[in-house]
Image (cartoon, rainbow, N blue to C red; front, side):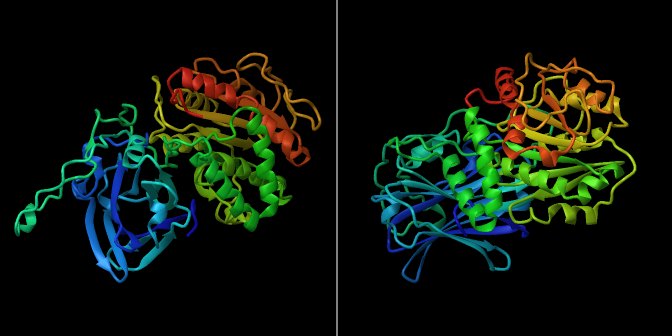
Length: 502
């Protein structure tokens, strides 16, 4: 598999094997991370001198000679991982050389029970790195995925570990004293790079379970050389290559989205992206004409820029609410038709049922909040409807509760409104945070949500279009980014997002 690619994992136990040719002194390791992207304590760093973590759910099994080289293995029992562990990353350090001089470097993923190889990732671009992050397993919609990462650290184990909340003392320990035939159970090789740990760092204190969503991005490696690309930039370049080969038309959309993002300083911004679609009966013509399919592809283009997994989570609302999987590069051309085969249009409209599902998915609960809940990544939700809701009070409560979370709602109404956008018109920046006027029409309630009182921060924007197919791509992306950057600033100021996040 290529760098940045991911696969779903359907087995309960996996074996991650790092292999190379020759006799280089490579040591693999695993770090157990929370949704905040940090270890909880020293027990979450598994390596040769601490071979077990999470009560045995992650085990370093050690090295073994193979034909022409060496393999170093880490086993993971996914079912036994604590619920607060959001991902496990697999890295390694090398002593006496660099990874660019280690031939045949590769990682293989196995079904630990059946022995079947699930994936192979060959590392071909290593250079002067002393440590390397090869891959990760992470939670996604209640299941597990594996991603090939391929990020190097010229600063060695210290650079890798520091990014995940560990302080490493790089002073080499004295050579081990070799005892004649010590008992096997007592053999303890002296560490070459002995880690020391600060107080545990984890997600914000909350009684709610952690989100089952997209893992937080890795920060750029802390190493010298101004020419180094950030991991986010590398991910975007890799994603563009995949899009170019799979769907050139979608690549053009993605580049158009990038223009709007770059103007707002969001060129390397990372967020989770969701799409909420109205499946009430009145939407029939919009679905049949292909206009919703085309709109969904435009939202996917935004997701491919924002979300490092390249997925847009989809939620539906009619009489009931539904989680409808994810819109991806692999399925975008047929997604809407396939979705409509599974979910027929319904004779009612309830916004709150979709909002409830979104909050449950990303934050572990849809309960009403009255205090801030911080998280590493923001969530951007595109909410599309052609009519008013039947649960106004419940929807208000969900919007107010979500204002205490790093969640932004972009409401788009299809139809006539006092805030309808006409193609070719200038996109108006908000004259004040949360401005807007009520029309007394079909979308008066959505206009009200744009200015709703009682929220911790203003976390919603609203505009309407009479026909989404008539809005040029560039103008649509300008509308989608009209208030989101200002909300990001407020969310950081009020403690919902890290102050230094991009």
